Length: 533
Image (cartoon, rainbow, N blue to C red; front, side, top):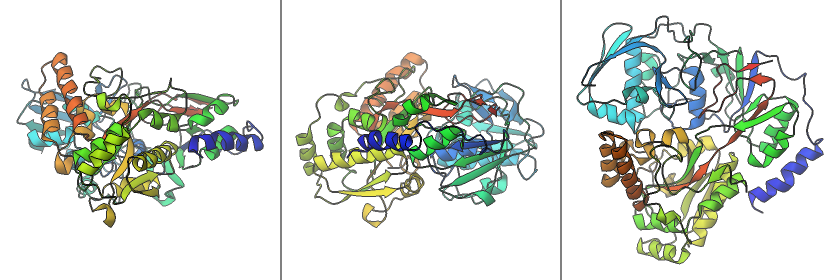
């Protein structure tokens, strides 16, 4: 039985057997100073530079702060910075930190910490960070609160780069932590943000705890996404991992948890009927799905093998399996960019449209030299939409004549396994799926997956001179019309070379107890200004 059909028959029945719409348990919560939050996946690691997993980014936004932060218009606003000066040629950028910034060990945040943090971030951010590194002559500490970037070329997007939501974000850490090899995980989680991480209470797969840091000084402005005053109204925020959606829904109905980051679509109708529960859009810019190939090893190092999957893949199968029949919340997407944004284009998207051709797919696989070797498919079975997509991919690959090694893992383990470059038969992988928040996909600047630049490329390590050339052209575009022309060409060449395959676009829904106020739609859970009556 397909996962979605199973959920329709068992989840609703299970909740009904438990008493239908469960009554709130008003005695369970510990009061309005504790917020209990159910993240979309397990928090398996806590190094936001080492990994691009959004769950790690979400937790890190509580622990670490950034120099700038984008608002809901994707405009960078000062965050840890008090003021900056820019030379007329956009090559010299001088910044001054706000006074009284402290780390969680009560040491002051200094220019040397910023410089070490930015260097580590640049080594792992394969889009904007890499671009800055290429044109950077020097970063200099002028005094404890003042530092300078000296560039050898203009870079008007520097502030956006330092405040973007997409992973990795340019989080500021103490120098001793920031000097950790960027390709190794940090072992200490001393932050600069509004909450301390309670490492002594961390149980991966179960619980992560954050407590308010009294030394944090929020900005005076109203919070707006990553910008403004990050005022936390709770002494503790407890993340409760609940891989089973029915369990999470029942806990929310009973008041055992306060906020569920991504409500399973099959359960949303029940939650909407539950007294004391509210439902709303999680991220107004939605999410884009992608099927990722390992370009280092056969068969997907040959573009013909990647095209074989592309011409057989039906995006509707993926969207319906994961998000149900309500197509008002999802759409197919012959593009690598976020719909309804200025640079959105479908140029070159024809391979994802029309009748799917299994016969041609088998022919292309044969031409690529595929000889029935097992294809290692990584599937995060603890996240419902990843599990659904894994089942669709498993079926798709078998339909076009591939032998599949279905590898069931939790999402945290997928995040670690996908970093391995070894042969798939020796612990590596061939294919997996991922989602990217829509705010990261509005342009090539935030879209690391289109930066096919060898060592700094996203997992799968595609390399395409044609794609890289288009990205470079975009950085130099003089106006919006030129940007649109370049992005159209970029979408086409990335589709032709099958850097990866877009799976579609959707908007998730979140659910929370109505005694919470201040919940907003954002690319991440914005805990600031949320309070509990």
